[in-house]
Image 1 (cartoon, helix red, strand yellow):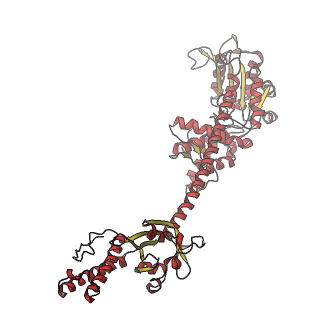
Image 2 (cartoon, rainbow, N blue to C red; image 1 turned 180 degrees about the vertical axis):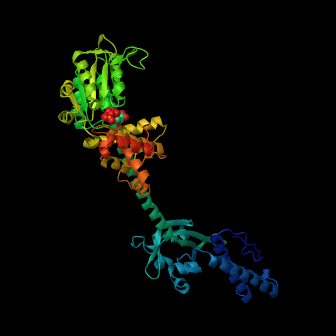
Image 3 (cartoon, rainbow, N blue to C red; image 1 turned 60 degrees about the vertical axis):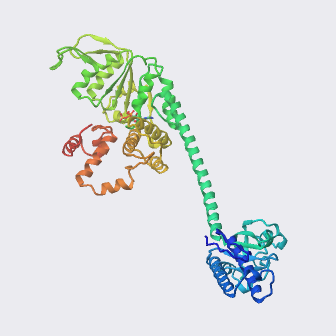
Length: 544
Ligand SMILES: Nc1ncnc2c1ncn2[C@@H]1O[C@H](COP(=O)(O)OP(=O)(O)OP(=O)(O)O)[C@@H](O)[C@H]1O
């Protein structure tokens, strides 16, 4: 703020540009003094200055000018948003602007000429009294210094108080004598509330950050634990488990049998890891440097399986244009893994039994026998004892193979393995699809842990693979498990044919595309094999 300077030849005051309230108040006081002096000249009370004012006209003009200026200052003070009041050296109010009156609730008349300390400033924020000698506001007209505070309260007429920020500035007259103080103040309730809210928010934020940190630490700990478990289990390559049931029925057995030549029969539902177990046994045996040859007994057409296993001589049958080594011979010195062993035909069972008993094979169309040193590991999800009873499987072959059985528990019997397996597959597919999904959400993990996994580890692997492919986040979400609402909704709007296709596909995936047999898709769907094959053709389902 600024206003024009006015020179008065009385020599009493001289205005310059003013920039703050204190200066205005200072000038206001000086004007008052000047007007008083001029008044004295007029009435002839003063002798010292009368020679300086030559005529009545000049005096009148000067008076008008001074009155105008006084009004101008007054209006500036009145229009200020902050409360302003002046004090004399006794601490009594000499003036107060409208904002001050409004803020403290006293009228101007009630404020003027009374001690401001007694009126609005006599107690501390906690309500305790203190003497005016200790008053910070009064201090400025005693020591001539500016005093500031924002941790006190002003009391209103109605007995309430408000937090205040004030500046008390000393006032000097022309002779540089202290004549009082000017106090500017404002209600800082709003600021205090904001500060309080901010403090509360800060506290909450600190608490939340602490919780996040704890969660993060827990997660890291859990990750480290899972990582350690994975490393521990790497003893058996990719075979992951932490459950006691798996340790007792699988890991321990692998350790016991691996280094012998005993025939092993691995029994368990589809997708429980039978092939991995067979590999682990081979890799921990003294045959590990020789081949492990796998035969999927259901994948080969019945008329070819024999030649696949035992080989054939040139011209043995139509199409046998050259001699062929069978898988038994290929596995010589190593291990032959007969997968889906329970599915082989009775006819082949006889031939297999002979090879296992005699340790030699005869190529189809050949006359010589070939000695083979092969360790047999067979695996099946068929209940062989039941099959024997039902005469679908030869008893003698069953006993020949059932030397060292390993029963693999289904995933639903060891749900505690789910987090570790899920994490393992997450890492596998992160690498495969170059993704950076750090963890699995708690909700997703709960879904995984609460599912019954009819397709066992294979199904879990597929679920994680699909989730990794479609995920764009750093945390993995899982949808599509039975019971998930999105999946149900999707199914709700499918046509009958689509629904049938999805159901058939699901069962086929569950049985690893096995159609026939006790654990085959046809049996589960309660239709015969040829009907299932016809439906698959109609629905456009092809084995991948
Ligand atoms: N314990 C396990 N740790 C890690 N991966 C596993 C485990 N068990 C199974 N898997 C994975 O699940 C999938 C199915 O396993 P595998 O083929 O060994 O099952 P299977 O019991 O032989 O099934 P099927 O009877 O249908 O032939 C594989 O990709 C395998 O890597």
